Structure formats: C-alpha cells, structure tokens
Amino acid sequence: VAYGCYWHNVLSWWRLRHRSNVLLLTYEEMHANLPAVIGKVATFLGKELTSHQVAAIADHCRFQQMKRNPTTNAAQMPKIAGESDFMRQGKVGDWRNHLSEEQNRRMDVWIAEHVGKEQLPLVFV
Image (cartoon, rainbow, N blue to C red; front, side, top):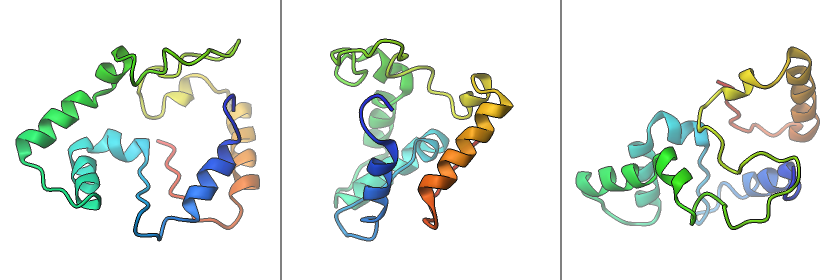
C-alpha cells in the first residue's frame, strides 16, 4: 500500500469499534444502500435529516460526483509512480477484472495472515 500499512490502519480502528465515538462503515455497505448509511451516520452524530436532505447528500456522495470533485478525488495528492488514480471506477467486485486466480489466492493468504482471529466484516462481492 502506497500510503502506509493497510492492516495497521484497518485493525487499529477495528479494535476500537465498540467505543461510542467510533463508527465503522464499508464501501460495500455504502454502495448497496447509501441513503441507509447516511441515516446511520446522522444517527451516530445525533442529527435528524429529512428525506430531502438524505437525497441531497446521497447525490453529492455519488461516485461520479466525488470523482469530479478535486476536494474528494485526491487530485492534489502527489501521485506515486506506478499507482493508479485514487478513485478508479467505483464498482464493487471490480477486482475480478484485474486479478488472476493466482493473485486472488495470494490475496486470500495475505488477508488471513494479517486478520488472524479478528472477525472483520470483509465482503468480496
């Protein structure tokens, strides 16, 4: 990972998941039902939103909107040679179009080595 240890980041937050001031979300969860996730975030923050506000936030958070927005697309971050754009296609499961069976097997081993006994909600759609 170009910007630090992926597993250190994920596992350090996962271990704090039961704290009242930590809310963990997954991209897959947002992709499946963004309005529901917006509601979850609002509840976590103690805010009430109208259905119009939820719809406006969902529209603003659509992948294509965020990809065009220099504030969210990491366009200002220095790009590391050989790395792809920060925001690629926004498709859940697109890894299947890029990894061979052998690469997928190696990823499974890498994940198992780092996750250990943690019960991370990993979804590989």
